[in-house]
Image 1 (tube, helix red, strand yellow):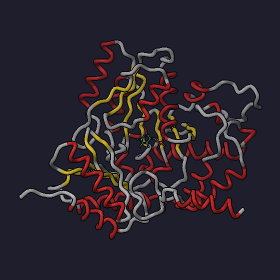
Image 2 (cartoon, protein in one colour; image 1 turned 60 degrees about the vertical axis):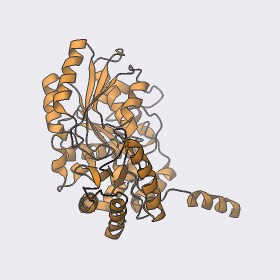
Image 3 (tube, rainbow, N blue to C red; image 1 turned 120 degrees about the vertical axis):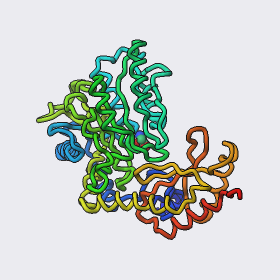
Image 4 (cartoon, rainbow, N blue to C red; image 1 turned 90 degrees about the vertical axis):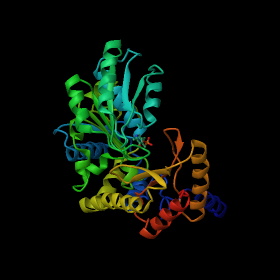
Length: 403
Ligand SMILES: *Cc1c(COP(=O)(O)O)cnc(C)c1O
């Protein structure tokens, strides 16, 4: 036992520490205590969301929680969803369901239209689905990192002309590098006019619809056909925690149901294993439910608005004469020097990141539009203003201003 504990300690000592106040590099906030406890309980229960008989109460809880999220986001009553182990999987499930719904299962030249700042998971989805190399059509973004509507419309017209079917248009609500939100309402108008499936990849941003102070940022989200929500990324639900919500409750079972011949029929709804790609899976919904209960409505609002406030506070202190700042309305901010070539930005990013690490601050170093940036995600409630002051002054000082 002693040896085991020693070995365990070594692993723990070498772990990334999301609860450190300086852990602001990624979308991995400190875990909520209720969520940690729920993970343990979930393991102890060892239920299986594959089928109702293996998780009677937890299957029910998952449906209830999907319905709660759907309703809070503004979907019509009766819409549904499924939990998945991460946003990559939620996006893939959405795209497979949209393809099936459009009758394009056997059409390998079909495409999905996203913005240039959309998440890399769309490329994975296209590969898994056997689509062609050019299947992920990336539309340029405007100066705020939002999809360019005119170019999107032009692309959709060009695709129709070429006879390339479109599985879905993706609106990203919270892009990975700067937290930009595509104009969801305008995209919904366009998609309903052209009869296209609209998926909102809200892995970062969709939870902000839960808070009265930020829900306006997601205007139009309720008009989507499907939405990816990742409570693991901002709210502190232990990994993994992702939901795929769908407006039309039958699309998931239509795409994935196999009949599960070795299970008793589900009593009211479909088995969890009939609604997505995963078969056996843990009751991840328990830690989401308990985490949300720990926060309560006011706690959720507090976590989300404090994250945005920290980003605003940092942004105010950065010198725009020295730094080009890329941000959006959420809690994510990236920057790079105003001047210089890509190679100089790369060495600047390496050196500055190292300097910050030596001060106990961990930022990330995304390569974006061909240039290295430093990125801060301000979702860590332990990050205090003093640390942000220190970060801002290090960033400002890392870049010389020419007289
Ligand atoms: C993180 C992210 C994903 C993928 O989520 P995982 O849980 O890491 O699989 C998808 N889309 C966006 C916009 C993301 O930021």
